[in-house]
Every structure is written in structure tokens, then in C-alpha cells.
Length: 455
Image (cartoon, rainbow, N blue to C red; front, side, top):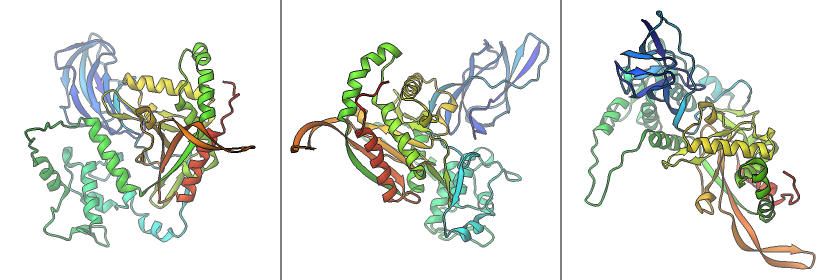
């Protein structure tokens, strides 16, 4: 009998750790090849880890709610062969739920621009490096937040962590930043921090304890429903976005009559030929991709006082799950795909999202996000930016409305298919002129649709 060491597999770019949420098998249980053993959760995905071999579990090395590093041995499986101590090959992970991508702010194929006038500020913050400390581990998410907020390594090392083994959690660092901005914590020249107000809770650990100690009592006509893990991640992500980016929104109304008539004309033939529907979503994504090529400074993110220009156009497509939660699969290199290619990618990702079959790479790398709120009958909305992107575009429902048309015989009122588009953007780097012009360009591409286009 041999012992197989089951390792925690890699679950996507920048993911270095995961939390054990539930053991599906226990010591003594017999498992088949590819059978799921444990559920794990990261800041990007919730996944099942399958066994690559058949055998019996003889030891479980981590308990539920413990944090595990990628590559750590999580269980020992007895096999019928000789002793084996090889690494578990990275399996195809079956996604249960996923959150909008939280990517690292800098990648190799992007151009970094320094905002003029910030050179001195850059020099002051150069010393703030965010790597593994000598005696402490920081998750990529915590390091990214620290970098965005300009925290020095000394400040980060001085934080009281409430996570496993004293690790600093996302809630710890966000609570510290809130105190720092409100003036209740002052930072000395050497990077140490002190509490300015004795009436405040002095450490994030105490704050977390107080929050945990709060008991919510339901009234006679109320029901308390605890957020599931994905909803908590979404909540934290949205709060972080609003705290990070000064949101500004612009709106345009587009006449998409030609587009609607064209789709009505080709949709039956397209379904017969391709075996699937062509929806409005790929058409919108194509228009957005063209506009991003026209205005590359919208396809960016921010790293401190640097602007990161993205060389790829990867469109995140916000989608609602049957559970009521949100997921954002990504159309990679959308500007290089034909309309048929975009349509097939949209249908494939949407179908696998509804079936909880997305892979980690399917939700990573977005440079811009699109959301279709018109699918729910809404005519207009103000979406929240998906960090670390700089903008998000929403389209409303297409409605028949009376509109004024200019003709050679004068102005007339006609029934037209009209739609609102809204753009939320980060006012740190996108001003109203750029944001408004970009949005109008998207609308122009939709309004000028060729009714004779062959697909």
C-alpha cells in the first residue's frame, strides 16, 4: 500500500492561497478517480478539488475554515501501489461560484504612464514594497489594497491581523485605512502608526471582535438571512470600488432601429446555420471594442500615480446567476473576434456560468466591463466600476418611442427603437470629455449599423 500526497492545486493567476470550506469526504472514505474531495474558496472562485487517483483517505491535514497555501499537502490517500510522493497534477476545477475579477495591477504586456506632476510623490512611495515579510504572509488582495492606498511595509507589518495565525485580512486593512483617512491614526516619519483618538477602537482585531460580537435580533415581521460567501465577496468588492474610485456617470440615448431590424432579419437564418441564437449582447460588445480601440485611455487601470494602459481588449460580461449572485466571465481579445466569434463566446460563457462550469481563467483579465440591465426591463442604471478597471458601461431596455427625424422634406415624428447607454468611470483618470466622447462613440457605432451586413 502506498501513500499519495494530495496538494492544493493552482486555481488561477495571482491566487496563492485558499480557505477550506467543506470536506466532502472524511478519513476512511473510499474515493474514485476524479471524485471531489473538498470545497475550497479564494477571493476569485469557489471550487471543488477532485482526487486524481482512486484510493482511501487516511489523513486530513487541514480543518474547515483554515487557510492553505497553493502546493500544500491537504490530505493523504492510501493506494494499492508503491509509496508515491509526487505532486498532484493541476486538475480541471469545477466552478461553483465566482466573483468579478480582482486582478494584479501590473502585467508584462501593458504600458505604464506616470501622471505629470507626481514625480515627487512617486519618490516618496518607492520604498513601499509589498512582498512576503520576514515573518508574515500577505495575500495578493491585501498587498494590492496596501499598494493602492500607499501603505508602507512598516505600516503593513504593524497591523493586527484577525485571520488564521494572525494574518491581515481584507477587513483588517480596510478598517485601518478608514481610521487613517479619518485622522484617528497618524503615521510617523519612520512609517509607524499611532492612534490619535483614545475613544476609538485602537486595533483592527478589536474592531473585528466587536463586529463579530454584535447580535442582530429580528423583529416580529422580519427574517434574518445571512449572506452566503459569494454575496459577502461581492459586497466587499463593491464597497472597495466606491471607496477607491470617484465615480462619474454619463448618459446617451441611441436610435437602434436599424440594428433591431437587422437582427430580426438574420436571427432565424443564423440559428439554423450556427445552431444557437444571436442576441444583442455580442453586438454591444463589438461596438464597445471598436470604441476602446478609438479611445485607448479608457482601457486602463490605476496603480498609485501611474496609469496602466492595457494592450488587450478583454470585455467582462456581467451576468446574473440563478442563485441571485453575480459573475463576470471575460471575452478575451474581443477586438480580434468576428461578430460570429463574439456571439459564440458569449453564448458559451453564459451557458457555462448558469451551469456553474466556468474555469478560473474564464473570469480573469478583464480590462473593461459591460452589463445589460435592459434584460430586466430597466431603461437606465448607474453601475459600479469593477476594480481595478476604470470604467463600466450599461445598456438599458430597447423601447419603441416617438422621435424626431430629419428628412429632405423637413422634420417628422416617427416610431423608433430607442435605448439609453450609461457609463460610470473613474474621475481620477477619465474626465468628462473623454468619458462622454467614448460613450457617444459606442452609440454612434450602434446607430450607424449597416442593415445589409452579412453575418
